[in-house]
Image 1 (cartoon, each protein chain N blue to C red):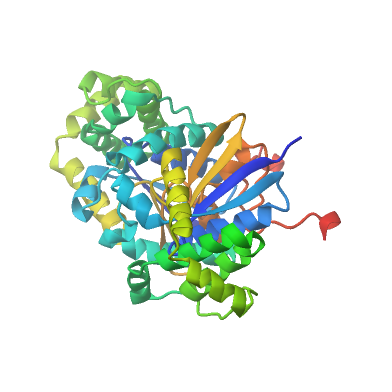
Image 2: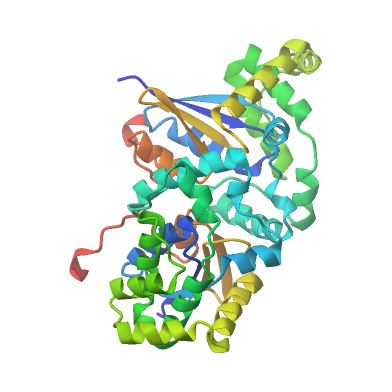
Amino acid sequence: MGRTLVELFYDVVSPYSWLGFEVLCRYQHIWNIDLRFRPAFLGGIMQATGNKPPAMLPKRAEYLLKDIKRMAEYYQVPVQISGDDFQRILGKSTLGAMRFITAIDMTQPRYLEPLSREFWIRFWSQVAGQAGLSSEVAQKQLEMISSSAVKNRLKETTEEAIKYGAFGMPTVVAHFNGEPHLFFGSDRLELLGSIIGEKWQGPVPSVPSHKM
Amino acid sequence: MGRTLVELFYDVVSPYSWLGFEVLCRYQHIWNIDLRFRPAFLGGIMQATGNKPPAMLPKRAEYLLKDIKRMAEYYQVPVQISGDDFQRILGKSTLGAMRFITAIDMTQPRYLEPLSREFWIRFWSQHEDISQPENILAVAGQAGLSSEVAQKQLEMISSSAVKNRLKETTEEAIKYGAFGMPTVVAHFNGEPHLFFGSDRLELLGSIIGEKWQGPVPSVPSHKM
């Protein structure tokens, strides 16, 4: 039986996208899925839908700060943030980063997972890390990020997410029973599992022993 | 060891509150918790925080319609909705219903769970009105309240005691940090922990040292 295609549309500005990313990375070895990473631009989705970052509502921002900490701990993702950081970080533009990730997606896709993780680590954690790209390759991709090929690719991926119905991130689209099923947020992965006939084992599932 | 106090602030206008309600009702027999229902007024919370119903964003409304259906099916809660219903229902006022539920909370609290459930069934499953007095009485009857008691509490809903109680409960939710519903507050390790949404119950469990078994847990056999 074929694997279920699961697409993850994400932008590294989004900490909840990091949570969804890590959990799906774990489940790609357990569930019968083909996980495809779709780097996209959250700013573009917001603009197209009229949506606003949730942290713009003060009481919600207070809650989000606590929520992301607790969720990150439970999901075992090293998000580390404090009061001001949250608002400051959310204000930064990740267009350059997402274009760089897109360039790597187009030329060195096997680095997409570690590279995305590295960006999140640098952006949302104080832990240092390395994605393993040689500085030569990295420099070349860096030059590419202003090329129209890369800009257009990021734009197209973003528009694809919007066409599926995305209004924020993370947006996960599972192709099941001949149609796309959209899930918004890092807290719909248990539901996703139930739709595609898989069992949720929490955000940190154990890998079956025969695969170890 | 004492039970963990878990408060659920809810308004029957909110379908996600129904999901959270049913799941917590199941877990109150499994987790070491003391579940307390806190009927409150979502309109009051929205006004105090400046929040708006999520369905006001068109693309989000389209998503919510699908999301509530899938979540309700997975959570085994009989929410029935279609296109227009969603927007129409969200526009209705549940102030009278929440005042009635509050009156019952003050006088016949053991009916609070079935009564809340019957309001949700009527509103979100059968799409019937819950604002007219005769309809409130019908719901009360479904919940097992005698018509005598129901009539008496219906008259109480315009009393300042009931109005104030609903207002105070709503303000308490706001003080905890609520900006929407369902809002769950778990009192653990000497402090309140607020969770927003019907999708934070697994996390709630992990915070209070309990295991999540999905939205439809099986009751341990020795309790059957």
